[in-house]
Amino acid sequence: MKTKTFRFFSATLIMLSIVFIISCSDNNDDTTSATLYTRLGGIDAIAAVTDQFLANVAADSKINARFEATVANSSRLQLLRNNLIDQICAGAGGPCQYKGKTMLAAHTGMNITQDEFNALVGDLVAALDKFNVPEKEKNDLLAILGPMQSDIVGK
Ligand code: HEM
Image 1 (cartoon, rainbow, N blue to C red):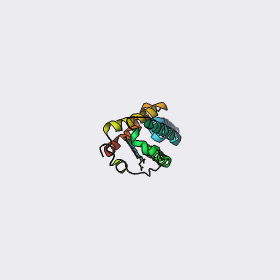
Image 2 (tube, rainbow, N blue to C red):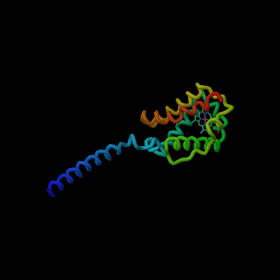
Image 3 (cartoon, rainbow, N blue to C red):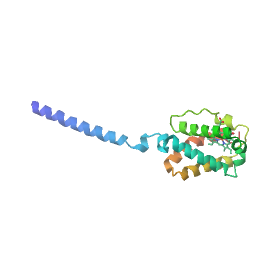
Image 4 (cartoon, rainbow, N blue to C red):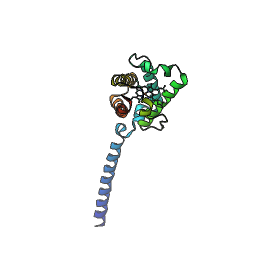
């Protein structure tokens, strides 16, 4: 009788261990548990994409006139770069704090059109593509920035 009870508990313990190991290995899937910040490659990757994004904007005749005064002033350009990096990093769940203006405050009075907004998003997508950022991460980032449109366009 004692041996039977022992065998029953041993079998139960083994079964519970197997269930535990299987459930743990499931959760180790990087694509579901890692933050977007980590999946993008961290701060260095975000800074590299941001620099490419700003270069694309500067070369984009649809919107570069908007940034003429910014590009002409290196500390102003540096501040915009840092704000963009912090904004993307924080939005993606990284260890940064966005210290700039709200999107509404930053763009009010500019009367930015939908076409201009789309052009800027296109310049960002081109930067993400240049660094081979996968479709999932690209869409996750655009899903964070997309809702800002209502505070930016037509204000
Ligand atoms: C999702 C889209 C956009 C995001 C995330 C974004 C983000 C930002 C950020 C973080 C700032 C700096 C705010 C601060 O100074 O505290 C800024 C400023 C600015 N943005 Fe945007 N922006 C977007 C769309 C646009 C568009 C479509 C245009 C025009 C075509 C535009 C033109 C500007 C300009 C001219 C400034 C001022 C730059 C300066 O300080 O010299 N933005 N934006």
